[in-house]
Length: 110
Image (tube, rainbow, N blue to C red; front, side, top):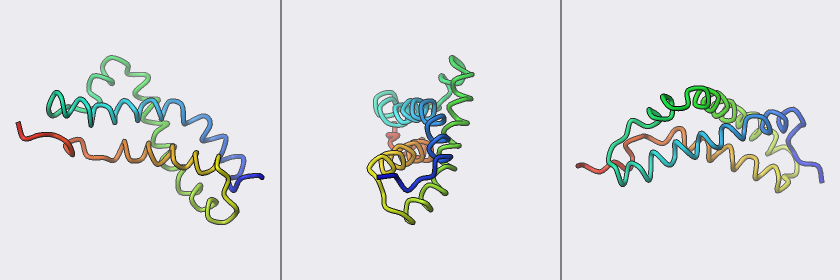
């Protein structure tokens, strides 16, 4: 069964996801694990200063994937949904949550 998403959305997702997913995983790690064990963080500070090109590409791809969600959700509700489409939207939603979660959500009052 062909999915609900058009081919151009699949291509954008395919190219934006690798960098966006790694970037979002790193940011989520800093916002959760490092904040719990090391206290409040300047999330992304070390990433930007150690790997500036990766952080720039990661930010661009993460925001591209967040913008990708709008047309994807529009198409997602118009036609029958495949499991691949659902997985693509789930990955984009993870990136969205990792990026927009406040940095101080888990910070303790040390």
